Image (cartoon, rainbow, N blue to C red; front, top):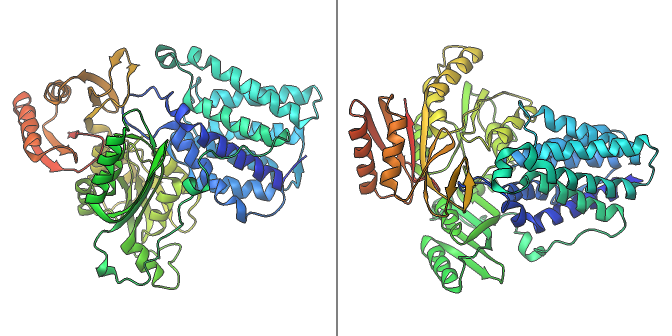
Length: 540
């Protein structure tokens, strides 16, 4: 039988196994644009539960509920949120139980699948959902045949998941085109392997990262400082798993970069990773630089001024008392874009974006600190929407409205359409209409060699995107901008947000390309300061 303590061991083992293999899972990512990779998002989601397990006590049902809540709050990216919702259904099925056998576990898997499917408006087969469903089907069959051995149940569950994973390319053409299996599905298989190890008596799969690498201190001690003494505002800690380009000379370069962008630098170089701590005013720039040399593993960014203020009082309130009817929370990456949202009246900005997906808890904290009766949340990225959506179930003292803004231009258009003198429903309708009317074009680089949407893409090539889809693959930014101009030629109000790696001079040249291609348009230039994207273009 599985009791609360055994279940905790199963989750720790699953988390370790997933994080040990997250780079293999990340390598299955078919999308060429730099993003919050599936393995990383699922791994960080599982870590959110693992970190809280030592303080958990109680029978199975109670423990499962606590783990579910930790996963829900820690869910990152679509894959991480779907995973958290699976365990939410799993926990609901175990409510009130002190232990569970094959029948109860099979039922919990089925409820987990139902919970995950319900979260996705139009479920796509050939993804993690398929692997979850077919695994639950195998468990149901075994139980109906009278299986009572948990070892057999989990052994067969892993086999079923592996078989389901192999057919994902047949169900999703884009996987077949890239000749890979689904990354989220692979992550689920790895989780089951970790759980099976405990059930079969082989114990917890150890973390290959080790405690010194995987665990960073919970918080820095600023109690002896005054807020005005803090020169660099963000305590930034990160572990970077080394990529092929991370040569010894590259390590020297990145260490020199970090030394030059802040103070209180601690840098550790290991065979397979490097780890650092720095106080800086531009954490986004630090993380973007690190992406040149590998993939981000553990990331921690704290606003030291806010942290000091919170430590200087007895306790920060869990939720700010309403001072007004409406408030806004927006997810944003880039100081210039942050400023635009702030100027438009956004109360709280959550740092995050394409390569740094915030968790549900990150967004929840911002919602709780917004002093309004109704809080509109703008995720501004399709891979952050599901994490934002979960906050609605976690807030009890205010109404949360999560708008499906999938780009920065959509978020800005939504706020511009807001009218404080009308009700929530009228505002939702107006804001959704405004989001639908704006086109979002963007320009970035290919993070990996791939075949995507019929395009053969080489790492480093320039990608032109329209409303989130790769449309152009070019060798220069100029040619990419000319191609994108043809897609927004029907619009007359254009705003060009240029990124942190783009000079003002180059941005001016790009704006002129747009003006020449669309002479009747008005083109504004804003230093967005965003990482990853050279340009984000709002066209209305």
